[in-house]
Image 1 (cartoon, rainbow, N blue to C red):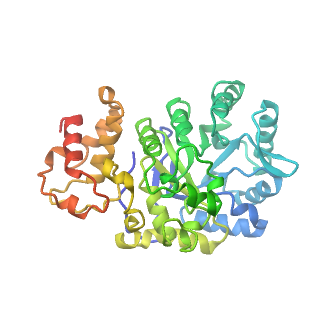
Image 2 (tube, rainbow, N blue to C red; image 1 turned 90 degrees about the vertical axis):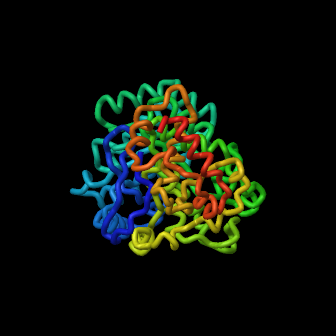
Image 3 (cartoon, one colour; image 1 turned 45 degrees about the vertical axis):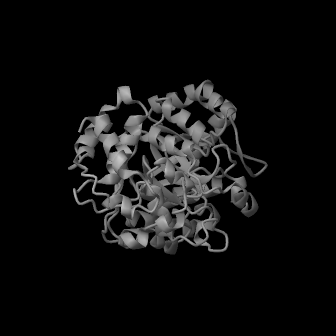
Length: 396
């Protein structure tokens, strides 16, 4: 569980969230691999050094290929223990092209090459790569590939198990296995409003994006976030900026450009999200991301872009805290979030959810139905009813 409130600290002060049940703390802003994959060894070293100097301690390495791995190796020489690495099992290259493999022999060879290329004898998070279909799930979690990954963890070659996924239905099944502590998932307001079975990579095409965009919260994604928090499975975020489209008034289906900080804030406000991994390829792009910590709540407010969500009438709180302050001092987003998680299994609310709810300074029963929150909520959420629901679920 995380503190979802934004802290107005200096740029030098990073925030950290714990990954699943591992006890490992990751910076809330991290590095994706796509930016690094396109720059030189010298540039990679500058980017990673700057990231480490500013408290960033997690990066993804999903791209196959010895060159980029060697660049990262060079940048982390003597500093390996300062950076958490997501290394993928099943990421492959066919004739020089980015690919996916479930062949156990290919997966073993590529993972061993990853270790060698990075110059390390361990990977922090061993990630099943691109698990997006029923077949992918079966091959990764019901076959010899799972035994291989479990053996890697037992041997200490990977510290924790994760998976990358773009389909909320499959991601929810992964979270429910009890095997993973981490899921790398595509999170941004547009993807939260597209059908559960949409091809995420097709949606990066402008025409497909506009065709599928519905201004309606996809309930499968909301449920996935809740399952992750209920099961203490963390999310690291990819596609935060929608390949840059959310920053463009011309290409964003939201009708206007969001800022990088607003995109980060949206992702970090989703339940279970631990870190947003941005494909930064320069010190300037990292600085832009780190400016998040210097923004005011007004500058971070993303409600204007998504105020027309049709899903809002169904009571789907976005945990944005736009309803604050509450005259009774209730952290409305936190109370609602824990109630949403508890409602998934009323007869067996996880002890951690009970504990975190009860540790709040005010609870659902403290609501006096003054209506201040509902007047300020841009999404028409029945906040008072949600407070009553929380009081009934937790008895306080």
